[in-house]
Amino acid sequence: MSLTVSQILLILATGIAAGFLNTVGGGGSLLTMPMLIFLGLPSAVANGTNRIALMVQNIVAIANFRKKGFFNPKLSIILSVPAVLGSIIGARFAITLPEELFNKVLALVMLMVLVLIIWRPEKKFLKKQEEEEENFSSLRLAVAILVFFFVGFYGGFIQAGVGFIIIAALSLITGMSLVKINSLKVFVIFIYMLSSLLVFIISGKVNWILGFTLAVGNAAGAYLGSNFAVAKGDKWIRIVLIVTVLAMAGKLLGVHKILGF
Image 1 (cartoon, rainbow, N blue to C red):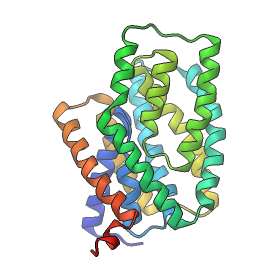
Image 2 (image 1 turned 180 degrees about the vertical axis):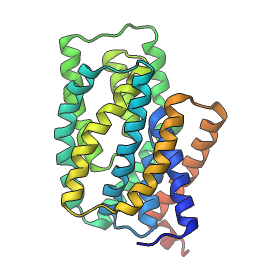
Image 3 (image 1 turned 30 degrees about the vertical axis):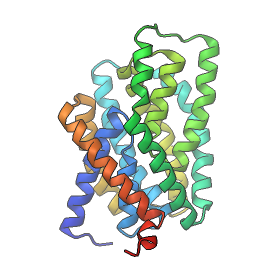
């Protein structure tokens, strides 16, 4: 499909915001997924296409975290294995859902994640965590492995907001710092995203032109997010995210038709 200049700028701007948000917390796909759907992609294709950008975004973030010394390859691989298994099942499930039903599920997920964005529960987890030391007992590691299977399933299915789930889970289970959690998060997401992307590619549910265009924006946002978080910028990105998510969720749920727009 051919893209206009305005569409390219929209995709790049959305990608930058999404890449930044995904790296410092989560929720970027709440912007990119609906944007791709509104550009005319079927929901399953939008879901698969979005994963190209997420792959590139996480490669940039992983490289930056590793350069700064925040990388735990052993734990990353341990948590990635169950996440990969879950993501394959989740991706297959996403492809089999009727488009109208998927859009409604996506809208409801967007609204639920929006509550997390406003409430910021990860701050509560991290505040509690400051009083504790890291704990990687066998029991806690087993719980983390089980949890990450379901994290992978959700990531393979929709992905939007999975960053918040990972932050909350690792904060409660291991007591790790936010920087270490984010370095683990981007690696695990990259690994299971690869497996789920393959499912979408095999099923022919990827638009490569839009995917790589979006990837440029996501990569730039990931670089900014893994280097620093600008307080004012983060605040305004969240405001834009809240307004946009409400509008897009309403559109997916057909609220505009009910109101006669």
